[in-house]
Length: 291
Figure 1: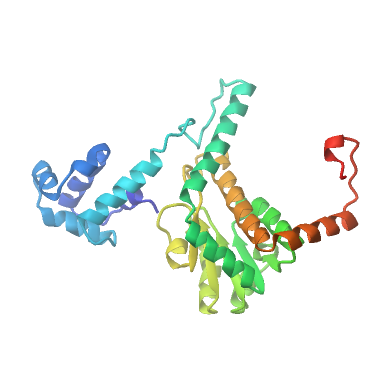
Figure 2: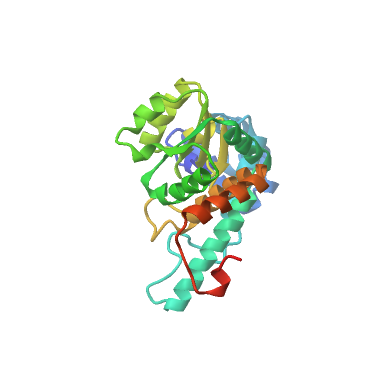
């Protein structure tokens, strides 16, 4: 959940709500606000700001201000297509629609790159590389990207499985061994089914990785490691998941590529040998032909 969504919760007093409305109304100049200036402008006291921060599990005004600035800057990122939920209009030509979707996808990748914690992804790839098995739990809307990722990893001899291909994925979660790494993918980070599987995995002492939106959510808080998807879409009110799907595809491609690079020469020669043996595709186009 994003901080601005937490501030909409019905957990604040009347005076605290006045302060929150003032902060939101002055979000562009929040760097210049102090506890005393806010208290004077809202006819409240400085301790109310501390109470607001504590209700958000933050230490005080300094932490609250830093979080508000960070979220403001992220959400106001200079996107050429301002609305990822409705990136094109009914009046747009085919060329315009194509260009706008292209821009959304390019910006999704750039945004995802800016969100990658390289220490975190290094630990994630080390964990995956050393695991005996990888089990992936994902919502159905992400399964296309997940299945491509699984196909890539299996081709370089990783034992990886998608739990949602079974009738009872909770059984898979309950029966996980400590030698397995569990990867959970959920844009909201609050998918009830995914959280149920996550609970079972935690109870088995399994190391967990989550990929969710940038806001605080159950999966991001409780997993061993966490990566962020680009977060500029609503859950339902959108034409398509162009932003989040592109972001997830890119993240999974990066993880696969880092794993591939761990033993680059062996993996490349193994993949080449396997493809020569198993592939039956043919092309008369010179560019596609193998030497």
